[in-house]
Image (tube, one colour):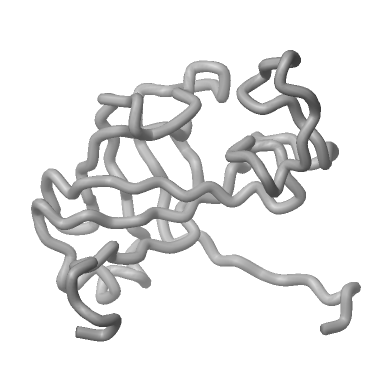
Length: 141
């Protein structure tokens, strides 16, 4: 791959929630009870077919306000743990600020998917959604 070639991502939607700044966001989705709504943009509505209440989905976000200039961080801001490379942490500070969150679908209404456990801020672009699927079955079933 030509390292000078860029990669283009097209947002498929946006998160709506009560969190307004990165400082307000929980450090990890499993410690959050914050509700949110995934708004899917019209061209991508056909891709929502099959998303159902109770299903677990994985949402990939582009952390549009995250810093991208550091390659090492103190895990969870704890200086006693020493500096570590961002690839070994869940820090939002990274070369490509892609975040992954796992949500249970509470409601599907038109182009909106209601979830809980939000850990990103209002207005965060959605890059992709994947079904967690049934972990007891082989892939593709």
